[in-house]
Length: 250
Length: 266
View 1 (spheres, rainbow over the protein chains, first blue to last red):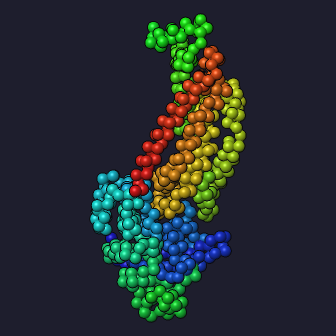
View 2: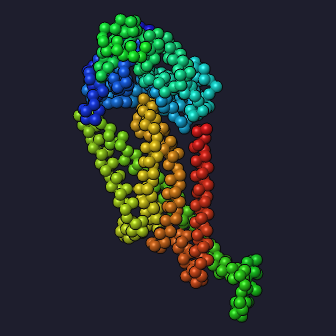
């Protein structure tokens, strides 16, 4: 993994997303560049479009307008094979979305075996080493329903990592967790950030943003209102809307 | 002379002399006449075998076709907005839209008309001028009919699966079809299984309609024996017990499968 932070990995230009035939404008022209190895945290009030922004990045939501390029390839181009590009973008969901009919190990190995054409042994070895990293090596034969929320989310993170993605997208990964389980998930994310992974996190965990983020984006009403280092955003905001929001949540 | 023949001799004598029979003698007479004499039990077994063959292949083909119809009817198939003006994508979208419309039309048509009519049309209309095994006609008619019901059951099962599962599959890089196959359908099958079991049982029983096109399945076999022995009850009851046996075996198998699928939700 490269630690050089200047190469732009994801470049977003003029991104718009309308729902209900334009009645609801979730994104109204978002521009952003995310560099390789960078950890970007997206914050903002609910309904500000941060989740929509994240889901547009791997085209789980089809953008209404604008372009998204990943490593120089415009993935909004209809001739591009989006499935191939999604393999390079791991995603972690608020509600984990583990496959309930598969064991933990199968959850982690099905995509590498079927998509990367890895052998079963190779995929399982990789999965086991990742399970060890999140201290769940003894749960490989468990089914998701037998795990706690925090364990599920840690499995969801390593499931995405099994595909060896270039960037990880986190969509409010701790919002559905009991408070005592938030820490264990954030610890995994911190460790991942330190290992040099490019990460884009939508979260309400301001402590995580302050501690781990290289850059914080504040979104409101479908636009990036302010962006900067955690110090700039949390200590010396320029925009009134950022101030109002932070006053409410901190 | 078999033991059954030996048991029959004293009763036969009573019948010959027009002596009254007691309950057990009467019962044995019915069984002897309708199942043992002239090896008539073989007729039931032949009928059972035909019913089993038709049901098995009709369930198999009906489930496959029904699942395809169900997938074609999903909103995600038709709502998928093909971006841009790439002519191939536009064509693909048009073809999918047509198939979705066709699936709806097919399901309404099949569910809205009697199975007996469908069987008659396929037998005398479609295959009227072709010599073809009646078993194959039976399989085709029953499979085409069952597919329409299976389609709605499977569609319900698919819609009961959390959309987050599809998103998780797609986000890993699986295509829409692969996500459906590996992630959504196995979960849909679990919730659809009780209703599917209903449908399979109904199909087994409905194959009796095929006696209308002179396919000697279980009902026809019983009816044939009734025409030889003039016993109004016994042959039909024997056929009925064999249907019951088939459906009970199927129910047991599906309950086992359900238990296995439930292994993941402790």
